[in-house]
Every structure is written in structure tokens, then in C-alpha cells.
Length: 219
Image (cartoon, rainbow, N blue to C red; front, top):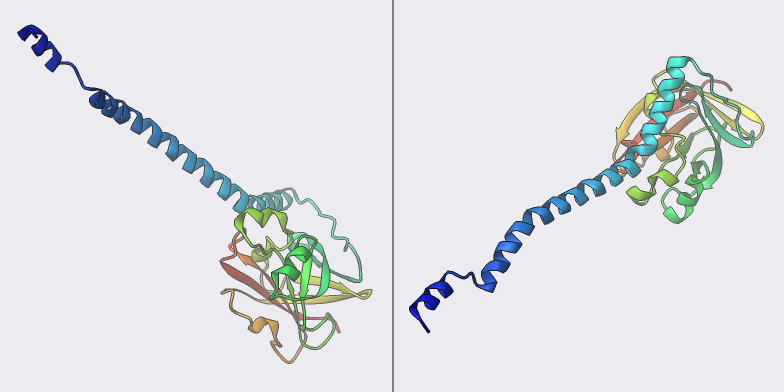
């Protein structure tokens, strides 16, 4: 082999060197693609988690701004709830086990659940109703959105519950955010008839619980 050919050979890049350079050039593009996919996935999660709540908020704002009256006719008078301020109207399903997702999740697809072993409307004690709960973020939109705006309620706001042909009226007395383990609201809250409404908080998540307690005002 001549000296010239030896010198030329030394300047030729090896196949492994060319591969490393190719990978080095491709890495930023792959990282960029991966980053975009992560952003897209996060966008989908946010949409499915908070989309239903944002829709309810938008509709509420439009009604308030344009003074639009929503139809507040109860779906039945056997057991249903009407909350005029937030335009919530839904049937209520009696004696639902609040500790068994297999029992309450199918109910929450259709309306509001009445917790088993709590008082029935008109009875002495505490009537406990709950809505909007889910087993995973991607299922949030499947469940009834009737209590998404529960946080808008303030002391003095009215709630109507229809039970066995009668309308029972309540007035909001208290609103607070509690942990999922706070079960005291399932029991009696005073020496009078009360109504407790519960939903997940913040809307679209299952991190905590928003609880609204109201006192019966018509006997």
C-alpha cells in the first residue's frame, strides 16, 4: 500500500463515527416529538377532567349575564331536588350505599344519590345527598354534573326537595371543604331537620369534598 493511500484512509470517518453523528442529530428531534406528545396528553387529561365543570361555569355565567330563566320543573315529585340559584334539577335515588362504588357509581350516571341510613326528607335528622363522583379522571364527564356549581351557594340560598308529592324547603346555613374521610356529615347535625349536599372538589377531581348544609324551613 502506498503512503498516499494510507494517508487518505486515515481521513475517512469510520461507520461507527457516522452512526454517532446521525444519532446526535436525530436526538433533538426525537426529544421534541416526545415533548409534544406529553403536552398533547396533558391537554387531553385537562380537557376530560375540567371540561364538564368549565362548561357548567360558562353556561351559568351566560344565564346570569343575560338574565336567562332556566326551567326548574322537577323531573318528578317522588324524590327530586331543585336548586334555583345554580339551576340544578335532578332526580334523587333513595337508599344508596355511599361506601360501595359498585352501588353508587351507576346511580350517579342518572342523577343524585340519597345516602342509605340517613334521614328521608321531612323526617327528623340529616338527609344526605351526593353527586358527581368518579373512579378515574377520564370518567369524570360520564357522571351527572348537577352539583358542579354547588360552590356558588351561599348562606341563605334556598334548596327545594320533592318527596312523595310534597315540597320541602331548606335554607343554606354552612359550606365547607373537607377531606374524603369526613363522614360526620352522614349523621345527625343538630336538633332539627337538615339537608347535606356533597360533591367532589375541586370540580373535576376527587381530591376533597365540598359540603353544603341547609336547615329545613317549612314544617
